[in-house]
Image 1: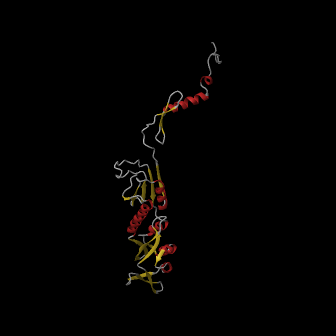
Image 2: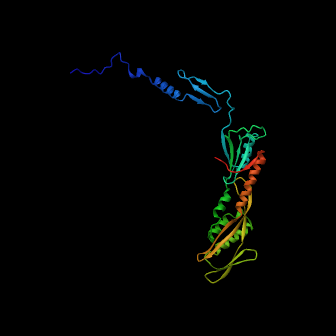
Image 3: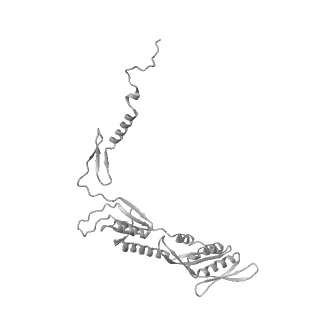
Length: 286
């Protein structure tokens, strides 16, 4: 039987000679280029990539509108919002304040008004949003409000945050917190509401010694509602229960939500005044 030759005939080209690596790469790149022949730049110009030499041909519409800014920015404080708006605004720019979202947005390329008589639509691609965030102090107090906890835990909370308290004097609140700690484990017999609305608790120790614990009806704290804003005065009403497990204490806000709404409106009005742009209250889309 004749054996097959393992030699390559001289007149048959090798695979490497048919298509070199460089030629292969150029062929692949050319295919990719032709697969996406249309190119659109951010300034509105358009080009077509021609076959063969792959040159770009400008096919832009000569009547195309001028390019516009595409940018959405979020800032953390009112000063940054005002500075950004003052840098990029024009007569079209407006502010929209959305209390539910806790945000104030400046739409810098909004629709023109009817003063020019044409009411042209704006691109709505350039905006800056102030996303208000609760202050650390408000988050700490708000997490505690509405809860009733053992007197020793509540005493520790009051003492830790006494610097936020403005009425009564912080030293008085520290003294109350220490009285709460000292009376832990006693048996509370009754409570009496005083003429000024404060509450006096009568207790008895294991040795039958009677005593009184005086707690004010309410106290006030001075903290910022939002990060980066000035502190405001908030009212807190004491709440308590006396049961078999002892005395449990807590507090509830007094009309704080009304204060938050009013302060939000104040921030929005100040932003409008600082930028000279009209302000609208409503819902933000997107």
